[in-house]
Length: 204
Image 1: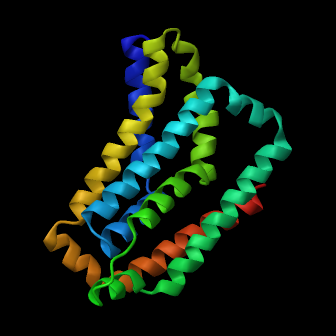
Image 2: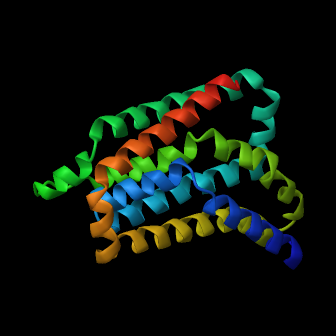
């Protein structure tokens, strides 16, 4: 892979990671309701999902899915249902994560990892990102190193970006202010997730 091609890939991965959406909402929820470690684990679990999409695109499976609309729609619908389920859970919580923390209850690191991974794997926006934009760089990977960069670049960029977010959010001054708005954050997260799920279903 040429230097210029990798820089283009890096720029697209940065823009993709930094775009606001349900992934950011999930990192915020776990950083707020758990700890810095919960947020970081959620971030890197999310990044693993991104890495899997990169690998799938590299192997050509993304093209196969694109040519099999029924399978693609089934996966997309499953993702929409999962996003809606997480959204309803957030609306029902109404600051529930913060309430558990105040009561001395520990939130699960497994749940943070599960949600981070699932929100990347089942997010149709990420799937379309790799189908539409990322696949154009696969042809540039004509060596083992190039193929490695194709997979690791989006994974590392995504993990680092959301780790920065989790660390910033877990700073005492920021965290205390966010915890005062825990109920509002849960509500907004739920609305964003459900709206995305509805949009996916409508555009199927």
